[in-house]
Image (cartoon, rainbow over all chains, first blue to last red; front, side, top):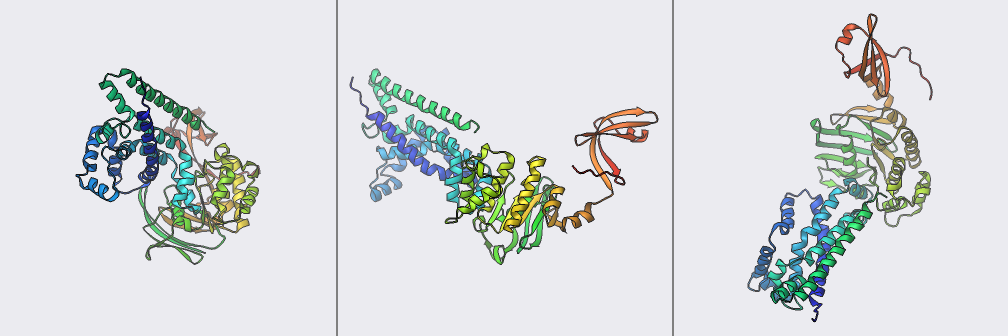
Length: 223
Length: 290
């Protein structure tokens, strides 16, 4: 049996990239959702949470339509940025970011809301801008929420199947991530290879989640 | 000098009230905002600090316009140079005592002031600790020192001592007074405690239903308003015992039990557990120094 490590490598590359992008998008979005009094807040919260209830195939289907070179968005990306998001790794990243958005935003938003309002207000009266307050006061006190967001996003992206299959297909070295590889191997009755991929995913997920629980327990212990 | 005027509707537990307050403060004054909860005291401080926006208002501090709703001016809290001490202290849990004070400095400000403030408030020994490892009184000191680190024009204290025990409270009152005099800083404090008001403030603004009901020296405000020749206590009936032709009623006042003689008619209206008001003439009280 020759083991192909590429699907695993692709899976972790995708998960790491997705988590990084989500961190950059998720922090400001969660901050906005936590403090805004805008009337569109409920709509924004709903949109962020949609991937929790939507079948991945639905999200994948619409992304496939949106990104296809026949659609206005797909044509625009193709002609202006030479970016083809269907059946490509870049498309997987975009799909994963959307699909894992609630896993980053929700813990962070809850974290922001659990901090007393006076903390940010104190920083403002001390002459600090919103940005300084966010990075030096709020985020340092949200480490457990940040950790949860990062780990859940990462783990959720590793476990993704439907969205990836819909917009990425099954191209070796480009879009064949571990979860798809397992499916392919089972279809071709290569149970040993499928078992290998499945075992690695199982072990990694277990270790990652265990680490979070242990670390969070340490954070929550009174000083 | 501070000119303050603001109007705002407030939703309180007793329904909606309209805060409508105007007053002037001389530089270096120590003023207490006194009144029942829901009278708008905290909101007033927050409007002054720029944390709450009034519907209409004007605030001028030493000739600088902080707020003028008619002209569309409203400086954000960052530009107002106030030191605000929050009721929950709002210390940054991720920073040490020293870190909390240093964070408050403006860019390029001399760090020497941090050392001075740590010494003045007796926190030098504790400067490496995080807020979670401090007692209530120590946290209060950090909040006070932090509020002064930026050399504010105005010190605003929102019931800073309400969560502390009696002795710590007295010591911190002295400390607040000391810092106020040392820095000559105009100070506004929200307080419910009459003894505190008399001890600390030059002037009291008594708020009732969102308006300034009384304004003057503590002795004047409480003299005309509250001084009387009677003690009034509220208590709870613990026991009623017949004693010849009268009854002896044991009443719990605070955590003292007082035995009071009552007539049969008076007792008829009472039962164990009744809330009562206990009145006594103050014609021969004894005052004993503690």
